[in-house]
Image 1 (cartoon, helix red, strand yellow):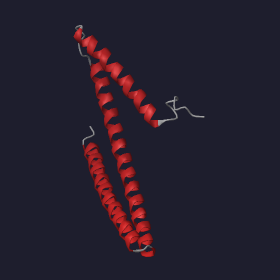
Image 2 (image 1 turned 45 degrees about the vertical axis):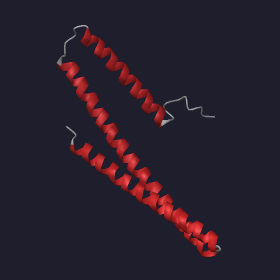
Image 3 (image 1 turned 30 degrees about the vertical axis):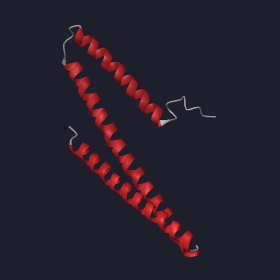
Length: 131
């Protein structure tokens, strides 16, 4: 049974472990700078590499979010269609309830579609701003 303790098996845990490691690295660097350490070409290159890595993670996150919103929009459209079919077979009270549910699902599908577009735009912005 997977307890979720292995970060190599759970992408969210892997991202969390990476974030904690980066936070530790930043705390160490902040302490070094507070104690008079100077920047060097090596530390500048490391900072640039970390910024590039963060941008790549952001691009991937936007892409994944856009895909999940697209999936959710499709699921809501399927649910709306199912409610519309059920409304055709229901009595008047049931038909009204199913039509209301179908409308709710169509609204949610539209909301997810808009969120997918926003995430895709954010991804495109990040890609355009790669160095």
